[in-house]
Image (cartoon, rainbow, N blue to C red; front, side):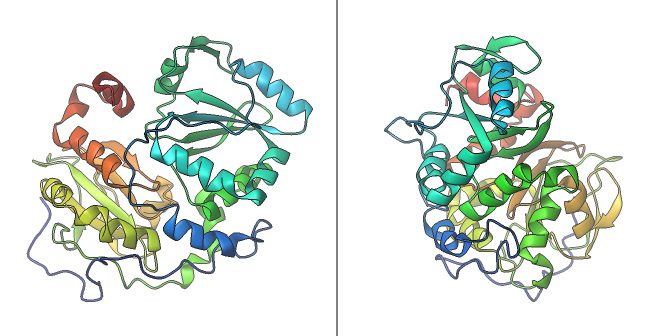
Length: 357
C-alpha cells in the first residue's frame, strides 16, 4: 500500500467543473502547423465531447477510403506504387470515437488533403467476419485480426512503412492537432529517428510548462511514490494517472467524467496516484526500479496526457488508456479491472467481445 501519512501537493488545484481555457502553442515549427491554431478550438469542444456512448446511426466511411477487399499485401504494394504508406483503420460502426474521427479530423479539409496525398487507408470492422489477408500472408477474419492486433480502443490506426513494418500505432481518438502531427511523423519518416513522444514534445515545447496546476482528486495517494509490487504484492490494483500542467484534456477528464459518483467510487477501490510526466519527482515503479516521473513516462512511451495505466497486484501492466476517454469507455475499463476479469481473460478486447458490447 502507498504511504498515506503525507499531505498532497499544495500547488495542486481542485478539479475543474467546466471546460476552461484553450490549448495554445501546439506543434510550433511543424510543417503542418498551418491551420493548427484553428484546430485547437475543435479539440476543446468537439473532439472532447461529453457523450461517448455508442451512436444510433452506423458510421459511413469517407468515399476516399480504399474499398475493403482486405488483401493487405496487394493494398501495400498499390500504396507503394503511388508513393504512399499503408494505414489499417480498426473501428466500429457505432463507436462514438470513430464517429468523432470521421466528423472532426476527417472533416478538416487540410487533414483530408494531406492524408490522401501520403496514405491509403484500409478499414477493418473489429466485429467483422469477412476474411482479411495480413501483410505476412495469413488469412483470418476481421474480428480475429483485430483481436490479434490488440486494438483495445477504437478507432485504432496502424501505419506501415515501405517494408511492411509498423511505423506508428494510434490507440483511440486524438484531437486534430495531434492527429496532424502523427500523419507528418510517419509521412516525413521522423519515426526512423525519434519516438512520437519526442516528436510531439519538440513541437509543443512542453518543457516551458511548470509542475503546478495538476487537478486534485480525493482518491489520489500522496507522495512518496513507492509503487513497488515486485516482492510483496499489493491487495489492490494500481492506476497511475500520467498528467501535466496546462492540460485542457486533463481538465476535461477531471471536470466531467471523474465527477461521476460511479467512477469516483470505483477509483477509490484502487491504489491511485498522479504523476506529472515532466517532473523530476522520484518514483519507484511497480517493478521496483528507482527512477523519476519524467524518465518513467519516457520509458513507457507516454505522449498523451492524461494517460491512465493500470497495474495488477504484482506490478504487471494490465491495460493503458492513452487517448481521449469519456465516461462510457472509462466505466467499461474500470469494470474489467475491478471485477478482476483480467485474471481469466488478459485481452481486454476479447473480454469485450465475450460480453458483446
